[in-house]
Length: 161
Image (cartoon, rainbow, N blue to C red; front, side):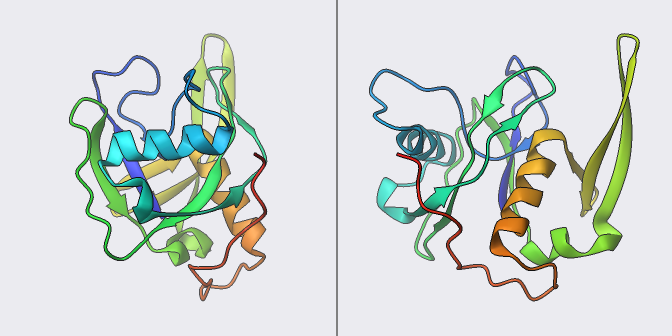
């Protein structure tokens, strides 16, 4: 799975591990178009380098954003050139990291007077939690396997255009 670390200069969710994405702009005809445009902007890849697969169920962030995740794959020839303004780091984590129970963590956060527990994943000293962890879980469930030999090129569901 390809994840980005959001820049520390961004407003919300700065410094957190996430998938490329963002808000709908007037030129976007569909939510898939938004996902593709944001991926191209944040990773500096060409649109042709992205094999678009389909949508997962929506996920709500802790800050109240409704995220409509889409799945896809960068083809082998894709060259990544991350946006310095939006992306602090990029990792390609093997899918089996997220199917290995030894990578699963629970983190506890206090927000005002509310204490919440979140499922998270540990990968090479990084903690991936919140909406990103929930999207990862959705993707793994959509593939339909909890084994460590999950195929990485299987499309999930059809696009919600």
